[in-house]
Amino acid sequence: MTRTVPGRTDHVVVVGAGLSGLAATLHLLGAGRRVTVVEREALPGGRAGRLDMAGYLVDTGPTVLTMPDLADEAFAAVGARLYDHVELIPLHPAYRARFADGSALDVHTDPDAMEAEVHRFAGAADALGYRRLRAWLERLYRVQMRRFIDANFDSPLGLLSGDLARLAALGGFGRLDPRVGRYLRDERLRRVFSFQSLYVGVPPARALAAYAVIAYMDTVAGVYFPRGGMHALPRAMADTAAGAGAELRYGQRVTRLERSGERITAVVTDQERIACDAVVLTTDLPVAYGLLGRTPRRPARLRHSPSAVVLHAGTDRTWDQLAHHTISFGAAWSRTFDELTRTGSLMSDPSLLITRPTTTDPSLAPAGRHLHYILAPCPNTELGPDTRAWEDLGPRYRAELLRELHRRGLDGIEAAIEQECLVTPATWRSLGHTAGTPFSVSHTFTQTGPFRPRNLVRGTENAVLAGCGTTPGVGVPTVLLSGKLAAARITGGHRRPTVSRRPPPAPTAENSPAPTEESAA
Image 1 (spheres, rainbow, N blue to C red):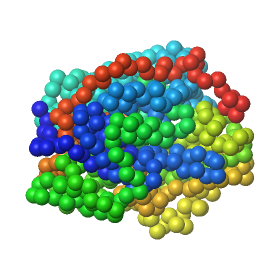
Image 2 (tube, one colour; image 1 turned 90 degrees about the horizontal axis):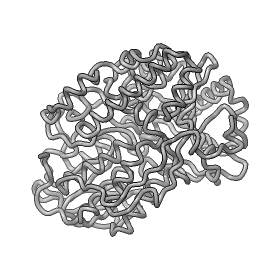
Image 3 (cartoon, rainbow, N blue to C red; image 1 turned 90 degrees about the vertical axis):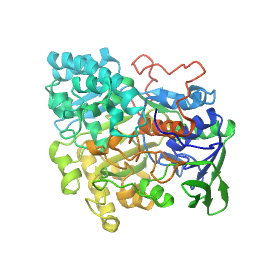
């Protein structure tokens, strides 16, 4: 049995209406708790917010949705269904990868379609290798999910199980890049199945092979897009929570927590005092620790993931070579990761994620217009340029990125921009994200699983943490799980879904939406 919050827990205050806070809220409501959610912004979503740029509707946070069943599980806690509230569109392809040598690969989650694409791209040997890699990814996911991802830990001893031996037998404690290389000879293909480790702040050459589970989510389980944008998910979660009895109070900033001994007795905002029996904190770790007046001791200082520069661009044209998600790889690879995680310099030959949500939902931009989200990983402010340096560096780096995109075939992109918003590490820092990164604490071995900052803080018995800084980690699926795990610390266990689940069909060429004029390639 894992530890749970002792004593009365009838009324829980959740601080933050992001994905983790809303997931915790739904699971708490389903277990019979009264819940009040306090959010500093005027709308739900947290990192998954919404920006209106003169009719261009921008998702300010994640753009990739995988494992929607985890969100559905939160809805199920209150007898609802995700698919009744959000229309999920399977993406086909999940990604398009474009390489410096001019080649391109569409990444399909349907195994037959992907095998045929790999055969066209790299030949018969790698097509066979893809099938073997896919089977390994599926086994890896099955072993990890129940015991290591969807699990609360009280100590490293919680790792000791038969699943640990099975994970070791699968090579999960080796390194990611060499493991993928066992199945795929083509260096370009290996990138497609290993770049995901950057999501958790570790280069593929140093990441545990266990983190190939993210490639499973991206390349096997499927990638989806909610109609109305990613923000449609937290908006639907908030509406469902309100309908199930939660009180959501927007535009309130938490200033302090009142306590009696080791128990939090009230959450105080800049507008009111809210008495409570327990609290879930979804803020960045330093903010949460500051409110609690407790910072756990660790043998080494926490290391943070790289950050990102994001250019949201509303344009009067688009480019046929783009899919919904396009990864534009530079020629450099290992040097890129050294720059991001060791030397602290900007990528000299950048690999970029370009998302064009209007491929799938044209209503996100004015008629005849297009929305592009250009993400360039960069060092965080602990390792690279600090927040002050980004004041001058930001506009110059924007210009460099647009010149590079022009060279890579998005000709005239700068002249096509009608509305834009540039986000840099200084922006992330101003939003309260430590080290100027929205990706929080990296997933090195000593910051993973039972070694990651726990969701219970010693010295406070009725406060629980949730969000990407605590267990299980960074990313939409894991953040949703963090809310579920936080609720379980209060309620004493997981609540099983009580209504039948009807997930969307897996992404295939047959059930994907017909391409719009601007998405045809």
